[in-house]
Image (cartoon, rainbow, N blue to C red):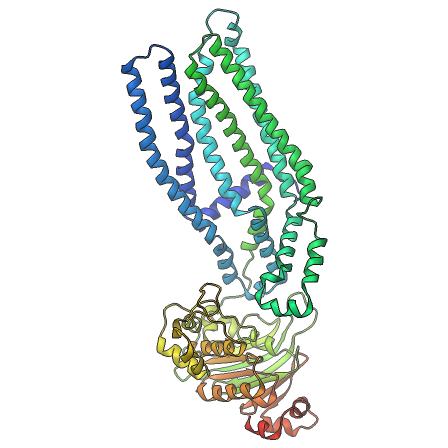
Length: 623
């Protein structure tokens, strides 16, 4: 916020911003222009009619003149009022669409962005900053809408006011002591003072807005801290709050942060530069109003025009000044808004570096695919450590592969590379002998169904959660849920597949346990019916027996698909055709359960024996 923004930067940024608005919200700019132009002009029509009627009443009082004026005033108010209301409703509809849909701009970008960038802390922080600025004081896209309204209203008002004000300076004062009011120098002096007061008022208001904008970083952090520390707003944290008195932590942080309390940075700014500049602007506006009244009343007193015209000229000149001030205030807002728009551009213009490929993934009816990792190494962005190092392995479709190892050994990274959420820095991953980077990205990821350990379900009907769509094959969804072991719970659902999960969007929604959620996630993977199906420790919330039962059943329903299982519990993977043991980012063992267990000095045997002591023999055998 400390960088001084030039006029050129403001123009470039604003032009770019309105192109973005026009592209993302077609019709919004047009609705604002038409609605606010009409709204700005309408009062001046009423002012003109009022002035003519008052002049006639104060003068000759001719019925043939008064009646057309009265009927014209009433008729124009009726017709133009109806048109204005119609345009206003159009404008409201478009603005509501913008308010409720603006987040779609960021969501669309997130969905189109390389997963590597989505996963970066700095990208998430940038998006949080953008949303924080919007929530705190509407900086960013909101300001564009506000300024466009001010600009349209200002320009239309200025043109209308000028049309009604011209005669103020052309109507001469008759002979007498006030004739000096007719002198061009006096008129130019009055106009000059009028514009100077308007510019000074706008300058003061712009400085006040700049002081407000300069608080953005402090205020945004204060908002984030308050929102996060209001633990009572997070129902799932309620039990921990009560058990450990975590409200004391929240209270301490909220008391330490003085952003919005009396004596804090915001209050000091309001009582200091922001308030002082705003007060100075208000004083300039009051001074201006007084000057206008004095000048108009003097000319009326001197006989330049009738009493009715006082209403017209005072209203028109003050409106001219007010609209000029609003227009310049809008320009000041645009200037203050440039850094906030720069953040938005930075986010929206994050380039996709991942090569998208051009080959279509072969849709084989026999599903005979082969995957090979050839000397693959990978580092997460910003990390100096290798998550995977020189990984070499090969497996075919139809294989049941278990991936085991301690936390941080590289198991989940292996899956992310296989699904091409990331690309390795070294080596190749081949599908049927072809580097996966050569396949069309959107086509390649369709051959995978994955249940990640941090999977998410949404507050939508059960069937929509499984299918990922509001329209789906109900019988296929039902079968997937039954195969995943959710059949009994499904039968108890009040509205079957149409039952909402959770209560965020539907008060009759049902809360489900962690184990039930995992079964739904597995059903979602089954419904997709992809050649590769991967379970990345999705059963962590289940007990060992329940996990083994799910894996055993899953082995039956996987059919000819390749099934890859990641689990800490080795007993659940005994049925797999092959087991890959990861340690420190490398595959150190690979083979069947019996082969790996036979190597008494191997890592697998060590892990197996460490876990076996916790299970009685008959349960272990049942697995």
